[in-house]
Amino acid sequence: MTRPTGRLVTIRLEPSHRQQQYAGQHFVVRLTADDGYTATRSYSVASDPDDDLVEICVEKLPDGEVSGYLYDVVEPGDTLEVRGPIGGWFVWDGSCPAVAVGGGTGVVPLVAMLRQAQRLGVTDRLRLAVSGRTAGHIPYVEELRAAGATVALTGAGHRLSADDLRPLADGADLGFVCGSARFAEALSSTLVTVGLPVDHVRVERFGPTG
Image (tube, rainbow, N blue to C red; front, top):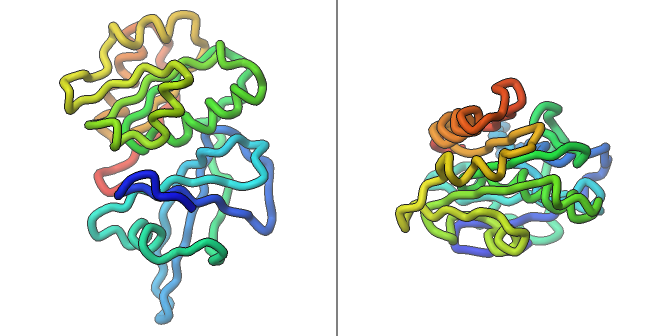
């Protein structure tokens, strides 16, 4: 476990029954109270599919039942109830050129794609653009910067635009957008505006408390 900021914790899981994983998938964490009450949340995977462990990144949210527990209570060696990997739509196997756009914690599945691309030696096939209010609001921001990602800090007045995405989408076969509902809607539309067919854009969105 690591806590890269005062709001984020990365947890590396060792599933008891490992299944084939694809970059872009997520795991569900379920907590059960003594009285039987349960709460579940989905968390995207940041680790490369070939990683021996499964890495998730959790943002501690105000009044977050699961995120607060994972951030404040869980310790290395604890056992968690998880299910996954889940999702067959928002995945990339590295075989075609792609552009991936993430906002805030929406960058997490993109990190799995990046790490997979680095392992496969096909980083030229993946172009990345990420956004957050500040760098501290973008998990893995230094790793993404080192990989050449376009980083837009909205707190500094930089919002991802068609001008940012047009050169990244040029020649791409697939587009991936992950972030809040508003972010996902805006940036998926932008990818279509700059030339990607609408049915080539795959979107993962989460709500205000996601």
